[in-house]
Amino acid sequence: MTLAVYCSLSTPSSFLDSAHLCLPEQRAALLEFKNTISLDDYCDDYPRTNSWNESMDCCSWDGVSCHVVTGHVIGINLSTSCLYGTLHDNSSLFHLQGLQRLDLNFNKLDGSLLENSSLFHLQGLQ
Image 1 (cartoon, rainbow, N blue to C red):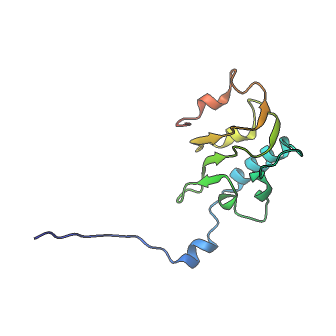
Image 2 (cartoon, rainbow, N blue to C red; image 1 turned 90 degrees about the horizontal axis):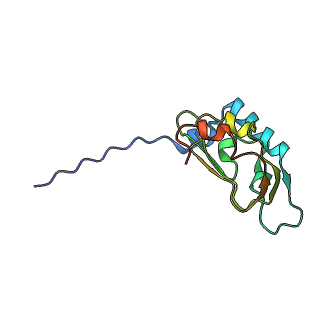
Image 3 (cartoon, rainbow, N blue to C red; image 1 turned 30 degrees about the vertical axis):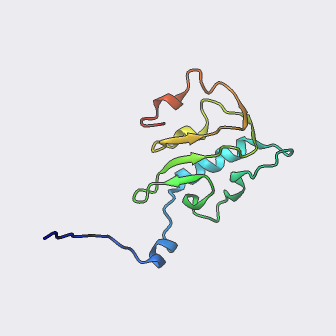
């Protein structure tokens, strides 16, 4: 005889829909980054940062993943997002202490990111 027990924590979807997980300082850091980078007008891809605005929870923005309990931004995927410009090692992205994944592939970014960058001081960044 086999006995299986399944436990599940469920939250009403109406609660999840109305919850604002994004922390104000996390939203501010993301918006500051958006304002320091330009969009390539001749790019055919969709710039994920188009959905980034103050009226929406930043955890629901395209390319942004948040921890479901703390609301910290843990992942940013802006690959192929028509971004160009300089990514400095003091970028506001590096104020996101919970950041674990950052994908900026297939954009036209340059800068001193790989030299003496605070990027490498973020624990757990993949």
